[in-house]
Length: 210
Length: 210
DNA sequence: GTCTATACACAGATAGAC
DNA sequence: GTCTATCTGTGTATAGAC
Image (cartoon, rainbow over all chains, first blue to last red; front, side, top):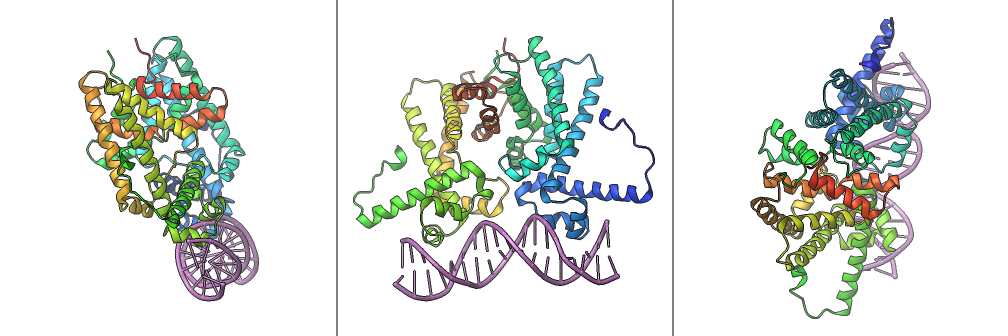
C-alpha cells in the first residue's frame, strides 16, 4: 500500500469524524455511480443514502462533478493497492499480472463497485483533469500497466501486433465491459464462469486457438 | 435488402413529404445519439438540427424515447441490409462473416453513426421492448449471427470455450467499444489501423499466438 | 402540421437560521 | 457543519392560434 504508507500521525476527534463522513459520502457516490451512471445519479439520492441534507453535501464537495471525481480517486487508490500486492510477487510473469489485473476490475464491476462515467461529458472531464489526485493515480496505474505490457511483449507472451497504448486502452475499456452485465442479467452462469468467459474473450480472443 | 423488399407501391405527395421529414428527424437523432448519447441529447437540439419547431417533432414522435427507438430501428435495418449482402456470398466461411460484421459495426461507429443508449434507463428500455419493429430487427440479427456462431464453432474456427450467447453479447458490446474512440482521440493511427487493431484484439485476443 | 408561448417537473446549487 | 426552504436553470411535453 505505497499510496497510504506515508502515514499521517494524530488526528483530532472532529477531524476523524469529518473524514468518516466524507468516506460515507464517497461510498454512496461510488455505489450509485456503479448502479446508474453519472447522468442518472442525483445529488438528492446521494444525500438520502448518506442520511444528511443536500446542503451539507455541498459543504464537503463543491459540485456533483467533484463528488464523482472523489469516487474515481478512491477506485484508483484501490487499484494501486491491488497492484502493490501483485507486484509483491516478483516471480509472476507479466502476462499473468495483466490477467490478474483484468480479473480484479471485472470482479469490482460484478460487485457493483465500478463507477461508470460518460466519456463525453465535458464539465466532468474538466473536473477530472484538474484533479491532481485523480490524474496522479491514473498516471501511476498507466505506467505500471505499461511496464507489464512491454515486458510481456518482450518475453513473447503478449501479442506484438498491438502497440502498448492499444493494449492499455483495451484494459481500461474491459474494466467497464457491458458484457459482464449482459451475462449477469441472463442468469445462466455463475459469477466465476462469467469472469472466466470474459477473461478468455479478452486474452485468447474469439477465434479458436490451435 | 429483404426488409424493404416488400415495396409499398404509390404514395401521395403529402405522404412522401411526411416520410422525408421523418427521415430527416431520424437522421438528426441518430447523429446526436452517436455524438452525445441519449441522456445528453436534448429534444431542442434535434428540433434545431432538423430546422423545425419542437412541438412539430412531437407530432411525429410522442416522446424522446420514441425518437431514440426510431433511430435504433434504422440502424437495425442498416445492419440487416449489410447481413443480406454478406449472406449473398455463400462460399464465405462463417468466421469471416462474423469478422466482416464486426468490422462494419466499427466503421459505423467511427463514422459517428452508431447511436449509444444507456443500458440502465428503464423508461427507454420499456419503449424499446414495446417497439415491435425494433424487437423484430434485433431478433433477426441475433438469429443470423447465432447461426454463423454455431457454424463457426462446428467447423473449428471459433473458440468452443465460449457459449454462443457469450459470443453474441461480445459482438454487440464491441459495436460500441470505447477503445475506438480512445484511439481516434489519440490521433496516432489511421482509421484503417484502428479498425484492424480492435478487430485483432477481439478475434485474436491480447495473448500472443504461436 | 407548423408555429409561439407556456406549463410542469426536476435537479443542481445556495441563503440564512441555528 | 447541519438543517429547511428556496432560487435558478433547463428539459420534456403541451396548449392553442393559424
